Amino acid sequence: MTRDEERHVARAIRSLDGIADRIFIVDSGSTDRTVEIAEEMGAEVRFNPWRNHASQYNWALDQLPADTDWVLRLDADEIVTEALRAQIAETLPKVGIEIDGIVVGRRMTFLGRAIRHGGLFPIRIIRIFRHGKGRCEDRWMDEHIKVAGPVVELSGEILDDNQNSLTWWTAKHNAYASREVVDLLNLEYGFMQHETVAELGGGQAGVKRWLKEKIYARLPTGLRSFAYFLYRYLLRFGFLDGREGLAFHVLQGFWYRFLVDAKLDEVRHYMALTGADAPTAIQQVLDIDVTA
Image 1 (cartoon, helix red, strand yellow):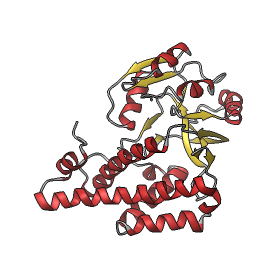
Image 2 (cartoon, one colour):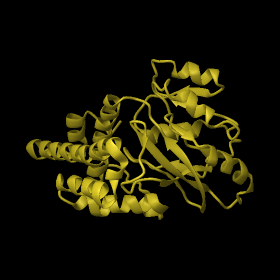
Image 3 (cartoon, helix red, strand yellow):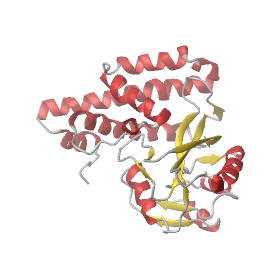
């Protein structure tokens, strides 16, 4: 999925060399050279208006040709590492018909530095699955691929290496915070279908989702973001990630989580003040139409 990804898209496409028969891109309105670059490199590009990651990705899955065998989900700012590429080429032809998905690792860099501490990475997630056997959770934030059948694991990794500025990163996470509030309020009020890998025994992702929804979500807002930061930065040795790691753990582990809580309290205050239901309050406060 792309929008204004000219900085990353060629790198992502090159990382698929030798393992992808087709490269399929869904663009939601790029104004830079993203589409031009992708088409020059042989990718098929289609267009769809943006609502959220899950709806966009599931729309994309529905556009794939019927003879598609396996699907690999890759964000535009990610690359398939050489080790994973070799494992895919060797392993995929040998995978039994009963296997629906393949779990791989995912790491990330921040401000050019690999984040190795804090208990976050590598994340083990399903990123490869048989066409027709996997769908994206219908959520507004932190969505995962889910499959019903067995999975196998590869040790290779996908690397998230975004090259944009910190200003871009904070703007993106401001929008992410609003979307996460939608999921938290839906967990509380049930105004939409709620899908979660925690209900499917979804491996590491399922365990983290269960902890987030059953434990973290019930802690006092504000306090929980500070406790989470201390856990990551001190107990899980996030301080070993250096200056870049300090910025990452403060911004992603504390600032972002506190922003989610502040926005959540803002919506709840609006509901108490006006008597509005959750979808109406979300529309008025966060400018997100969950009924669209």
